[in-house]
Image (cartoon, rainbow, N blue to C red):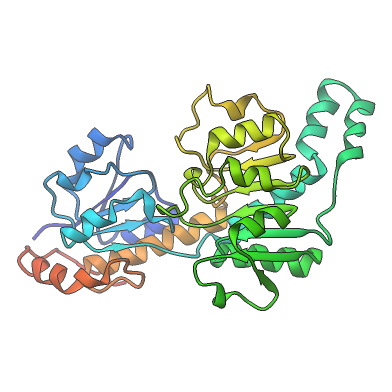
Length: 337
């Protein structure tokens, strides 16, 4: 009998590794490129995903018992292809909600008070020039924040802003009737027009692609600030670059991009009113540990033939189990966990 092999597209948090190492061989891909993953997939029993998978990855011969997202966003995984092949897909939703919420609120404070710009000016130009920026800074208290996507992250942002800063909160999501009472329901055009701050926290779907486009950017207040910690394609990046350059809005904080890593010739890099981070909103020590442990738990359940707690495609679970019964057994499926 063989020992199961877990392939990860990037290293997991050590806490997750410790949970798995007595049960399975953990193999980290030397790079997350398409050819590397296709070459290594055939020897993997479970794939742990931290980077974008090639859309045709599962066309490669494989023996996968399941795919686990080390995090929440499923747009990194070709879920439809996995479902068509009866490969269970699991994720660990909500584990980085606090980290991303703190990033979003912290970014808005940074932009509203121009902290990064003041620091830059103080170092390069001098005290008086840096201090002059305070003339155009604003406070969050009493203003309106619009949140697109009021899931675990969006709700936490709403709580911080409403209860912590006394802000008026507008929310938009697919099920408007599920919004808490302290969040006002708003259609998208209304939300963008009425908000002083906008936080994008929705999943990327055909309906949300380029949700924030030139038309809606034109609706926004000149002092408005936007933060995007969802997915890059939720924003029309070319339109946002124009809006920032021509000061349709005051600024933006961007953590995610249509192409990652961010190309060195991207127009955002030439703007002084945008705060850029490298898809790191959810990467705190605490969140990374929770993601690693959550992903490891789902891997162990898959290896043991148990249904994942957060199964994305439950409709194929029975077929997947039937296919599994035809495979050789492992030496220690559950590793005692």
